[in-house]
Image 1 (tube, helix red, strand yellow):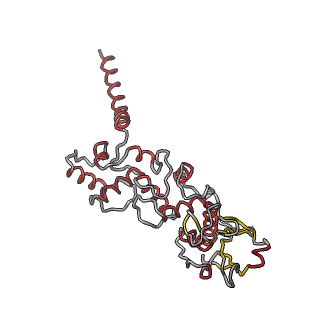
Image 2 (cartoon, rainbow, N blue to C red):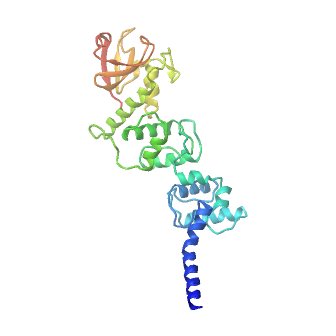
Image 3 (cartoon, rainbow, N blue to C red):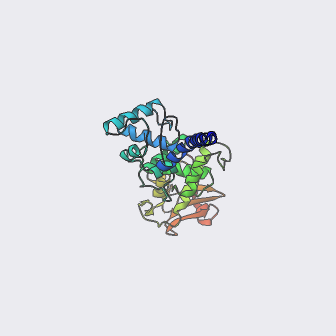
Length: 297
């Protein structure tokens, strides 16, 4: 009998330790006081948007987040226990998949035009790393794209402004940059990023007065590229001064402009080739018409 009682007690004790893990697994995602991470950050954002939370978006489930959760639960006929379980998360329209994966978009690349919780988490990570300065609004606009391109350039990733699996994985493991600027200066890093970004438009057709990825003229190309990085250039070639090279072509004065990308080469939208292309400054035509270069960075 004593052996049976001891056995029963030991089983009950073991069950007591095992039960929380079983419950956590069954409920999948539960956010409560003391929790940290992307799930809490997303919870705070939703509660902030609804007027329940007034604290910092820091991803730390403290007293302020607890009060916001209980307030929301009370107003929505939920058990006001301050724990964001499945019912509360569902009422807040928070996907437990997004919470568990952080900034991962479930295999879908995040790009300009994307919206939603995954974009918000992407923006927050880029903000924390110093790449993004815009609003945490969950809308993938030009500011988010510029931040992604700068991050990609610093990490030695393909610079396309699209947060695919490789970029998202690098953000999750955001250690020191894989590639450092050549002279350690912010201007050099930005110039390198701009040059890398410009290359993605190679082959885009030359279009007179064009200033979009559907077609560029020479100044429209530089105007668009620099604009993605918050550098506002004048629209015409004779008014652009920066990491730019100028040529006198069809008329006296600066009538053609390109972006210097190193190794005595520049990228530009050429009416001669009919598209965005890379050309050597040593080419006879351009070397004879070269006027000079200026920087804005």
